[in-house]
Amino acid sequence: MSEATDELVIEVKGLVAHYGKRKILDGIDFDVRADEIMVIMGGSGSGKSTLVRQLLSLDRPTSGTIHVLGKEIAKLGTVERGEFYKDIGVAFQSGALFSSMSVGENIMLPLTEHTKLDEQTQEIMMRMKLEVVDLAGFEDLMPAELSGGMTKRAALARAVVMDPKILFCDEPSAGLDPVVSAAIDDLLLRLRDALQMSIVVVTHELESAFKIADRITILDEGKVLMTGTVDEIKDSDNERIQNILHRRIEEETLDPDAYLERLTGIDVKAGAPL
Amino acid sequence: MAEPRPNIVIRQTEAIGRSVIESIETVGQWAALVGESLFWIFAGPRLNQPIRISIVVRQMMEIGVMALPIVALLSATIGVMLALQGIYTLKIFGAQSQVVLGITLSIVREFAPLITGILVAGRSGSALAARLATMQINQEVDALRVMGINPVRYLVVPSLLAMVIMVPALTFIADLIGLYAAGVYVTYDLGLSQAGYWAQVLSYSSNRDLWHGIGKSVIFAVLITLIAIVNGARVKGGAEGVGRATTRSVVQSISAIVITDMLFVYAVTS
Image (cartoon, rainbow over all chains, first blue to last red; front, side, top):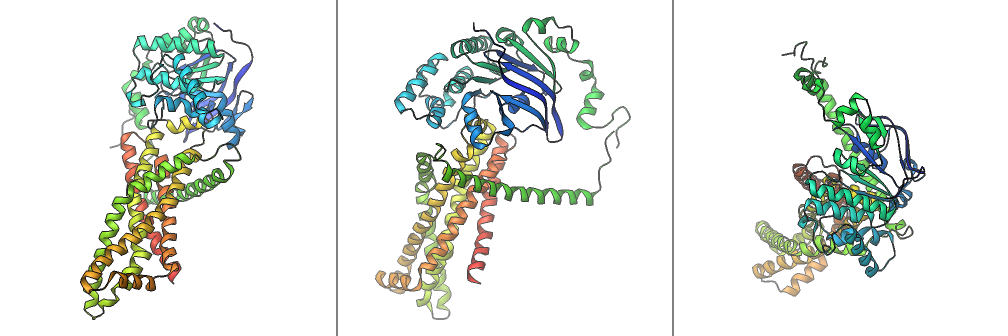
């Protein structure tokens, strides 16, 4: 197993992000070290996906700074951004494979677009990556012909085909059965060790997080609740962290009046206008 | 406590304001798309990110070659219809021999570009909007971005180029087929020879008329692409959203084609 170093590949300071008028991220400070697996956890609506979209420069922050591989990504122009993405690999939750292309063509696309390698070399590289994710021989299938687990593997193969310095995985085990989910976790650990990269994983699967993480960041209502190693998180006496870890439902969410008020904006206890 | 609901006048004013802002945004998006497309066409090769000719050719096949049978069928039908109506109407004045003039100018200046534009909007514009909307929902557009592949360069420019090449080409073919089909009926009904018919067609039409139709078809091609792209990119929701984006794209494209046609004719002829 490779050791994480203190060199930071991602550094986020005071990140605030809105979706429309709603504040989703509220002063996030966050970092990822070289060669570590950082898992971002949190309940629904805690801001996990928004944080990752910000790290990938898919959305613009309201304020704060994000440095990835030493570059402030909000200040990158169209062309520099294209260059920056060559060092990044992303496996989306749905896989996001291009449905009009075969698995092999999907994996070769970044090579075709960014390198001058001949087709034969591209095919060799594609087959090597398929081998790494245990999908050798599946290059001619179309994405619609793959199972959920195979789609995730193919997406991972495409994400690492350019040997990125950072790999982002959004919910890699969502919707998979425990056996396939465990296999994906093993695959991520193997990829990190084989390709010497930092991996940022967004997940809400506790078992998976504890298995693969070097460090975990827990988000709650758009703020970082805690960042620490698996043991530090498990041993935390913070009640909200324990609630998240043990899936405790807060009393407020069980109060029907409070729930209705959140949905409708009407003060139910004071009486609804007729 | 929730705020009281504003009265109907305020709500209607707000709705009008919102739709005005949305329209201005749309025009801004069109302009940005055209600007960015031109940037990638000219600067792409220098930045080692050229437009893939193979994708443009594939799109040209889809937009142009595959649409040939339906364009041929409808332009032939319209040619015959114009001949029938023209002879019927001009017979009242005993001027049926002048029908070739009406047919020629109607087809070359108006019907060929209009019918081709409407067919391409319904066939390829809708497909483009649906494809882009589906890609947007499946995060495929985001996937392109994070692979360092600019979606405008990869998705928009090939479609735009293919449309701008193939819609005028289809229009020219529609001109020929429409005129030919009309000629078959006219020669049969009026006892004119084919050579006589084509001699009249050539004498009544000029390059100016031909370019009038072809020029309009280029504008239609740009409109169809921009409307399809903007609707596809703005999709919200799942499969239902894709359906809505596709329908909106077809309706807006056809409306834009007809209105632009009128404005173009007014600008050129007045």
